Image (cartoon, rainbow, N blue to C red):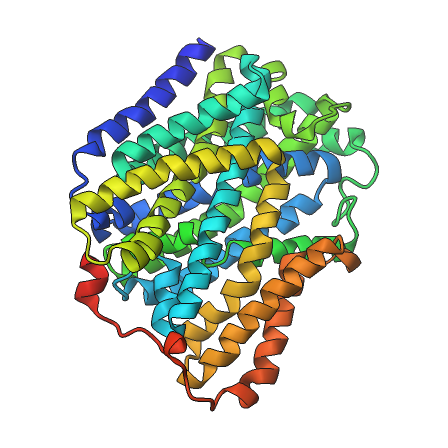
Length: 474
């Protein structure tokens, strides 16, 4: 029954990819679903992407080890989504672009566009690697497969339906996965609580400190990780792609805002509950990433095991396919169309996107096998992203002037260097490298605004002209 449920679920995902394979007529269909998604689909696909390996397997493992702190730090993901829905998503949807780098070229010129293209691709590979690790951790104890093969099989299924159906397939499977994962994780949390005697039973059995506000972390550690979560995925390629794919700016606003609000009230309490139930039930786990799988196989009724495994796979696969689709779009739009062959024919661009899907998936799988830790891979990715991206997007949307171009680009470079340096110093003061880099970027922008703001702009720092036809048709 268990194997049949998993096979049926994976088969349904592949079937969606096959169905949409022949509907890919242009790179716009592939990359942003023809810009035709209503707000409800935007909500579902954004929420499904938010509930990835870090938000489930990784957060349950952290709840197992540190306690209540994980419920606090995960709110950072959802608060940034709420903010983006209110202020950023509608602005992006009004622009005829595909990627984050398109926006940077439009605001800050070619140098910034190329830099952000490279960062976007590196970010996607790191986050995709984290999802592949999570898939391996789920399947390894449940199906009795070695981690390496479990990760490769999971990556292969996601790659197959993304390769066939592009972003259309991703959004449709996201809706299926969203329903499964919400029902599955909520049911699991309720059954887990019942098995240990409710929250009173948890409080009686948990190690001292698990129920303190900051758990076993210091306040500085909690603040640092919360800021890393808040900043790390803000305006990332996987969410920006959803802004662009909505029918219009209103659909983008309500879909993104709705996803953030729903997840804020659903996910933190759910994952911390499951982590604590696992701690009480299996107090001596040596690999906390396996906490969810052990709950599924040893605590819950066998009749529900297939549902709970499908929920975990849905959570991870929805994020993995979203990141993979974003990475393929980046390769096509930011590199191939801009640097190799401008104005390529649509059928050729779709072929390039499919080829990029295979290559990116292979690279991310190697990364996952080299760094088999979900949360570490996510934090490594955040360390590159937040220092260079968050402040320029905020300025570009809310307070843009041509005289901000040099200060912004300078802040991006200083933020990146600071983040890498901070990471090499093993993150002193319990401050995440992404946060240190962001603060350095902010200070640099403030200090350099009057010094650099009036300099004449060189060619590679002049904003790209907004050409809707060229932007859409490539």
